Length: 467
Image (cartoon, rainbow, N blue to C red):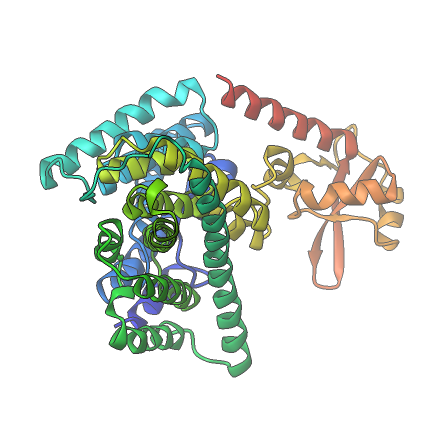
């Protein structure tokens, strides 16, 4: 059955890769709020198969990307510009997250913090309304019930435990980084093995599914979304060694799932690993210092938020999600301390978050900010001066530069062209279209034109983020 994921991806995607939250972030930054619709539908089908057949993954990634597909359809129908397209994408994501987790505040913040990556006033009102709408639909269908319920109310004993939560946050940052790096390692190993053995693509998810099945024989807790085990960790219904084993095996299972390109999201697994990590820390801490410690389930609660926040790179929205998933607002200090420490540490070990690291591995540099990725939005062919233009470059000089290997392809971006300007110290570069062994000169990219285009893009981005 898992090979059906490959079939759907082979038919509807170019690269056989499942789309997710990282692609929505890329769409918001580089594609005027649009995502791939055809590949998105195939990814939704693949993720549905993965989740229904026991893949160790989460449901939020497919839901967020499907929201992006719906938003893209609307944008194309109304011919929305870039700002409107991004706002509509944020609305769709906020509604999807809110409906999925019954968490309206977190849904709105997730769209702003993770997808749009700004808190512009003009975007807040529609996104907040969309988040409320998603929550209303959830509650009409499922009821206003918190996802997790704590048996023991959290209470800090005279705030003396706050240093312990800071330490927990640092540990959770390391655990989150280990989870993310394990996934990337599994993907690299899968790619390498597939290339070396020349395995057919359909066999990759099948092998991963078989590996998960072997693990599930002895430990069925590690497959699926994992909310049952997360709830047991939050209620303290696990022994110390059980929590350690489950956390380690869940990390392995998630890495196998992603390494097999089986689809799904990473948020729910990070909640489970975080709750288990927090429970282990809490059992040890309360055992060593019982007189100054509260309940160990409080640490499970904080750990759940700390690992998830570090993985998503979203301390604000993840903190709110944890609050809304549990319905317990009494232990905000513990969660905030742990989340801030974990995200600060994990962001130094990866490119700020799981999603931004995914993009960085594809050569999309969103983690560094607009100054790094805006150059990739412009093709040399769209900024160049054509050879027939009255301000065009000298044709003979361009021909000599091409012979010397000093040129840029028309399909290349300014991100590739700017380093050539820096090295060669020239005013312009010939722009060519490669046709076999021949290179046809179609124009010239002037350094000043590239800088103007970049400056306009920076100004437009700053205006949108501060409007």
